[in-house]
Structure formats: structure tokens, C-alpha cells
Picture 1: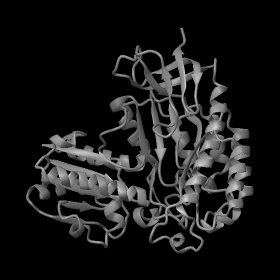
Picture 2: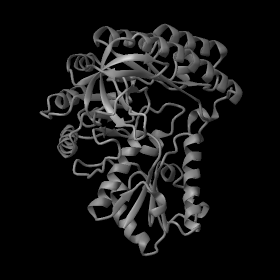
Picture 3: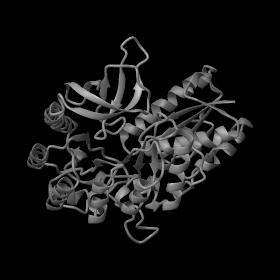
Picture 4: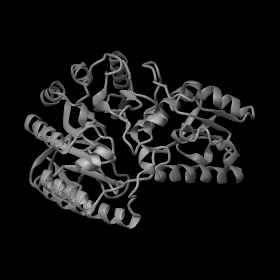
Length: 446
């Protein structure tokens, strides 16, 4: 039977979707992204902010429409949306949905599918989000076959005042080092990975629960020393600035497989706002950490994320953030508007910022970063860079799309290569001929 799959949200959610696909494929089901031709459609949802909730609901309603038109028969909704609203009886609000599953019920998906086919309506959401997938969990990789996201932990214990993740995903839980190593070996043997990307709600906290100390440095060393012929890049996302130590910095600096690229979400720089956010860091610490990282890791590309419009953010706070961005000149930067979420402490804070002001601040911040990014990219002009090819264009353009080690998939810029005589997953030397705010254009070295 063909089962359609939709995955919304972040790479961490995508890993969950891949596990579901692997379980279903083992039982003989065909997995497809073509929703219209599927008897059952499973949608893995996101709900950490209002926009994500709205997107999830819109996608579900589009499936309901297809069901009413007779184009699909069954709908299964899983993940963060049912988990967040576990006490809201979503089955009454969306009676056309045949099953709702929370984030802790993924391994039961085959049983749920069988029960749905028998006509059963299911609402199964564990009150405690304690799921942690085992090393034996099968995965069907949905990214290009030469790279994979590896989830090293689940949940979060930072309790930022604006965030629902601990309520949705539970307390912080690390996977065992051996389980992660086994998974990387299995995936690499199956599809010859060129890159693995470590993800979790807080990757730098890795190991604190299992081993009573930070273990990310050891994990990175173990992964770097694996005898895997094709694996060249190990990338680290979602690092929390509060949990860096000297050992971790030295490992990143000295092991060549580890990309000199760090995703370091800072959220703000004003001490007053950081305190209201319940972030356990201040401006002095952040500046010192950035200096240490740049001093000790050659050719480091720093990516960060900032939030604008947090309750009580004054013009002075925002200008402090803007000046900080101008001074530090992050290689990569994303920003988003604060979303007032029920169930978080910040929801009840006074001095909520009007939407118009939040949008103006976001635009001003991103225009500033675009100028910085364009200047940084222009420094690549005429230089040779190593590029991992991600895809080959299917049209008449004869182009390949790839990334340098300073770019993560989906969230960062691309390198457009003027040839189609390459293969996805190959590393190529590319001469950069043109640059823009986010992308580079080049030709293969002759």
C-alpha cells in the first residue's frame, strides 16, 4: 500500500519522519511524497510558534479537502501539534482526521496504520514526552542521499521564557555515544554519506544527563576517527552558547572532518532582555565566547539567530543589538519576530511590542545583515573553494548546486556551479566568478 508523507518544521522533525518511513517500509508499505496517489497520508507537524501551528492546520485542512473529494482515504496527524494540544481533544475539532499521535508514539506507527485501516479512530498522546529513538531504529533518508541529520539528543531543559519546547518535547535526554556511532556507520555503509549533521534542541549540552558531564567533544572525536571512506564533513547545529568549554573548542579546531562552522543562536545581546528571556548568559560572556571561537578555530563561519520584539524591548535595546551585529559581522544570521505563546512565562509579560514595530525591527536587522553578508561573500571573488554538490538542475540551464563547508543545507546560501558534468555527493574545486548577498557562482577548476 502507498502511504503519503508530509514533514513540516525543522531537521529534528525530519529525523522523526525518516524513522516513521523506515518502520513502514520494513512492513512492505510504499512511501511517497505524492499525496494524491496515497491511500493513507501521514503528516508530521510543527507547533512551537503560532506561524508553525497555522501552517500545520492549513496542511491538515488541505488533506481534509482531498479526503472529502475521495482522493485519499485516511489521515494520520503526528508530532508536535497533537503533543502541544494534547488536552484540547483535537479529534472533535478535526473529526476527519483518523488518528492523532504525540511525539512519544512514533515507534507504534505500523500498529496505528493497521488499526486505522480497520476503521478505528485513534487519539494516542503520552502525557510525558520521553521518547528517544534507539540505535536499531530504521530510517529512510529523505534528504539528498549524500548527507543525513543525526539527532544526538531529545528535549530541552533550558526553560527560556518564550519557548514551549520543554513542554512539547520533554526534559533533555542524550542518546548513548555508541548508539550514535552505530547509526552513523549503518547509514554510511548504506548510502556512502559525505556529510553528517548533528542536531538536537541543545547539542552542546550533550551527555550531561547520561554521563554527568559534557560529552560532545568526545562524540565529535569518535565520529572524526571513524574509518568511513566517503565521510568528509561533520557539521554541528543548535549549539547553546552557555555550554561551550575549552575541550570542545579544541576538538572543533583540530579535527579536520569537523566543519569550521558553528550554529550559535544568541537570541539577543541586551543584558536586560537576555535576563527576561531566562538566558543564562550576558553580553560580556557572549563577546568573550565569540572571540575565543574565532581566535582558536581557523576560518570559522559563525551562524546565529536573533529574536526581535521581545516584550519590553526598547528602541535602545534594539539599537544595541543592531550595533552588535555591525561590530561582530556574523557570516550567517537569521532573525525572527517574537511570538506570544500561551503556556510560556513571556506570554504574560507586560509591554508587548506592536506587530508593526516588530516587523520594522526585523526588516532593519536583515537589511543590515544583507550588507554584511554581501561584503563577506565578495571576498570569495576569484578564489577557489571546495564545494559539496547537492543537486543537478533538470532543465536546460546545465547547472549544479552545492555548498561550501561554511554553509548548512536549507538555511544558508548556495554555490551555483556552471556545469552539469558532476554527481550529487561529489566534492569539487570551484573558482568563484560572481557573488551576491547569499550565494556564490563559479566554475569547476580546469
